[in-house]
Image (tube, rainbow, N blue to C red; front, side):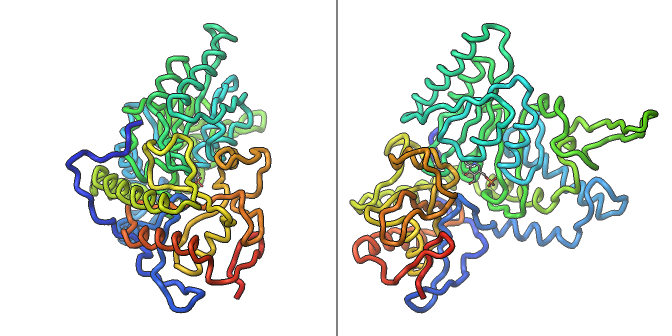
Amino acid sequence: MSVPTAAADSAICAPLPVLGGDVLVPLVTGGEVAYAALDYAASAPALQRVWDDVAAYAPYYGSVHRGAGYLSQLSTDLFENSRATVAEFLGCREGDQVVFTRSTTDSLNLLAAVVPADCEVFVFETEHHASLLPWRDAAVTYLDAPRTPQQAVATLERALAARTAVSPGGQGSALVCVTGASNVTGELWPVRELAAAAHAHGARIVLDAAQLAPHHPVDIAELDVDWVAFSGHKLYAPFGSGVLAGRSDWLQEAEPYLAGGGASRRVARRGDGGVDVEWHTTAARHEAGSPNVIGVYSIASACKALTEAGFDSLVAREQSLVSRVRAGLAEVPAVKVLSLFGDEAPRVGVISFVVEGWNSSHFAAALSAEYGIGVRDGLFCAHPLVRTLLGSDPQDQGECGAPESEPGETSLNAVRVSFGAGTPDEHVERFVTAVKELVRDGARWNYRTEDGRCVPAV
Ligand code: PLP
């Protein structure tokens, strides 16, 4: 994976217009402030362009692949053109398929449902749960957390070589699942090198691009990965769609992910009373039911908006924000930034940290209530990774996002700040100032735990 540095001469662009930039939120200390959305890694705000495109299409909304009416045909065209746009955005190869799903989680579960019966899956323990958990029916090897990108490649090489040694020559299929950018540390993984290692050992590889695609160009052919999965709501298109794109063979050889209309080409009663079904061999095979045309169109709109804005200048802008936040946090000795690959590792705008003496839920609540800043606290659905980074027992897995201690106590959770193409400088400046003030002066309000979350005690 190449370093997220923009071309040397690329100008830093202005933030892309997003919805919500002028939303005012109340402060416990009095008054209101414009909300600073710094939780892009969970869900990014909608691009204004996406919203405008969806609004312009809305009056023409119609059934997809079903109706004979004009609007149905228009909607069907829009849906299929969106598939072509996404294929272009991802640099898909001849013969690749783009399947529309609900999210990255759905995409990876779909892939898990179609892997061949003898498939062995290799996944680093550092993955998001969406990559870690779907492989229920496969033999899964969980790889230890590497501490450098080179170690990641070496660890995978070793695991795949051991597999080859056990079943020389005639081994069954194997799949490696790897994230492009960590949703905890923001660090980039050496995707191209991992893909080369996988292929050298006859394995395939799927890239979880949930955190990569919104921040960095993802080219399936150039990275030489077999599949890519991502979610619309992290790519500024919050209408409930996701993507699984890549090799068609496993997808087409397997039973449909969902059985029903849309996936079936022909259904007929058999003489013995049963039903014969001929399934589609296109992407439709795994898209049964009425598709989410708005969600799909919004993803295509976001792909176009990011491409037209120019990833080089988007990356340049984001990297300047990353530098500002990291430099600000480095000035606060009580703050420890979580990192697997070290300070020099290339990363996107996702930074997690703990603050000495603070429960992370308390810290996040104070950022919200006293500064109008929305971040996330918890284990970020990557429990083994966060616990490894915190140096605490990786077996002790709390609920996603649940604080583990009362306000004021030191926490085993972390705080995550994340940003992207729509983030104005003021948001990260406010965040850095807030961190410094909270650490220096403490919270100005009292907080209590309610339903597992830290909230202002009003
Ligand atoms: N993979 C990574 C790296 C993520 O950060 C996330 C969500 O945070 C997912 C997968 C799952 O995405 P979704 O919740 O959209 O299915």
